[in-house]
Length: 291
Image (cartoon, rainbow, N blue to C red; front, side, top):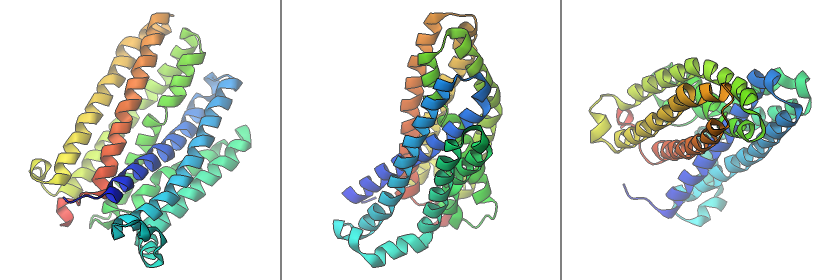
């Protein structure tokens, strides 16, 4: 695999795009299911966090178009090459970018309306999060249900990863028992969501790999193994939080709150690693089943 500087730039931009889009969508979901447990000031801070991520996601979506063209040309001149830009746009990236921008714009409008826009915000967040299923390897796969599986996987990923910063905000601002109520509600819903995340992720991977042996015989499979290892680390941290820290927080232990803050920071680092590997997986390596 011969990689250039523009390939690396494409991976980094896509990582930022994943993080901002899924983070914004997950922030909207968090506001929806935790709203009754949040103070007005907390809801406002989380909404501001979502606003920032929406702006970053829209900017990163535009940057991805330009960097992809430069990567195809292996030269900065590709940014201005209308032929290459048209290829990127009509290759599916344009459709996905339009869906993403539309969904994120709906989120901005809906959040500005407060409680009246809650359902619209959820719809916009879902459209933005699933926009990645309409372009790339899964979209090109022969399996008709693959984009649907990936779309559900993306929604589950947004729910989980997008909740980390809102939970960090709560861990910084709330008393232990108040924080415990929010963490318990998140953990209760997350159990089912994580099961869906893993099930859909495994199904999509099986479609793209073709055979289990490709996990260690292909570049795509080895990157997938690295992603699986990172997900396992994230699951271990989440299990530690749910089974060990949250019960102590519910009981009013302030030391457990500090430990949760550190654990959430660690989860954020691992989540970024997962998104980086995913960006490399979907940008640099082709699935064995499609080669």
